[in-house]
Image (cartoon, rainbow, N blue to C red; front, side, top):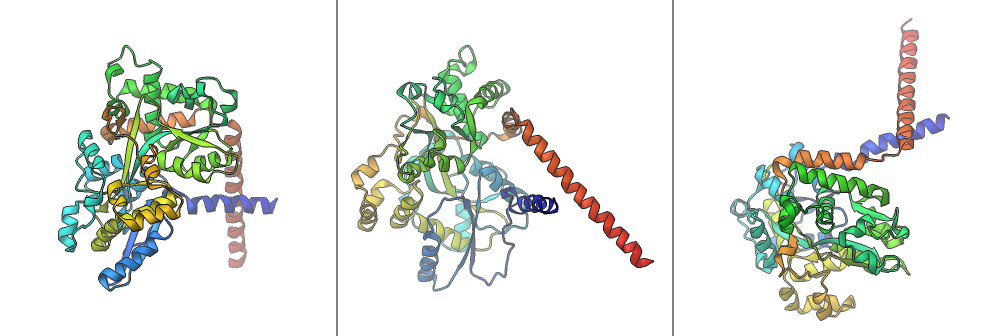
Length: 445
């Protein structure tokens, strides 16, 4: 019993120590030290990229550099760190579009113009970037072009096991995530994203497909208007369908969902295109995965590198890293590792013999690689792919809705277990406090 109690205590303490929300980033060090602190998504960079940058930096400057690389699971965790931890020294972050907008509006980001003026370093590779990203930013009315350098981009869609999901299932579009066709094999095998922004996209698009927006002002909204609408009625409708969905879900995931898809433990997943590409290629033998964006439309997303406005030590190195990551050779090497699509233009990559050789070495035919609609989606139909914007003053209401959804159907047995563990831990702590007090009294006597 004592061993069990000690184990439970250790588990709870470990959970507090390693909680992603409590990520500990290094404090500022001596200004003389060449150092770069990067804060990026989990599993979102090739293992050799950081080491390659160190060599690049040495070649360009003649100086060595230490790179501290920390990760986050969601934009919300990253923004909490930037907003609340005034002592964290971070030189470079990688937010998504709406997060870049929110941070910029809050004065948390340094403009690239200011960064270049302060450091004396001029960005070299911005011309390599696919212009469609900046075009979509302009279309969305998000004024962040001078606050980030694009990194990766793609779509939000549905990854599925093609041996289990039927044509009838696929015909339902986003309804597949609700098992609209009633495929019994899918019950308890469907994942949504543990992210209000992504799951909200699926919810409002499902409402549109199901005709549940008819008779409302939303009936004629574009995709971009739908996924960014958070008035009371839309939140209420989205909450309704998200709660309805709970019965068929396996859970809400960030990385565990793609792992389960690869292993055949789940059959449907609301997924980012890069995760889908990677999962399709590395899935266990006999697991056949595919990906699509429903005909009704969806989200075109992008992530980019940005420099926080406070506690930045090495602006020059941050800008140099932006340039390095958007070199065509580095971009292709990175894509080969993580599956996501670099913001570097396809034509720039095609013009680099070394980059093309990397594709060939990885058994990709260049023509097929760049024609893959999962990697390089058709953005000509602007109305079908919307860019997420910050919810602004509606963030609190949207987050509250999301928390209500996730708390629905919370297993009572799990609640009981948590309560029992808490009581045991409190009891153990009280016991030792009393014991120590008695021991102290005896010593005093």
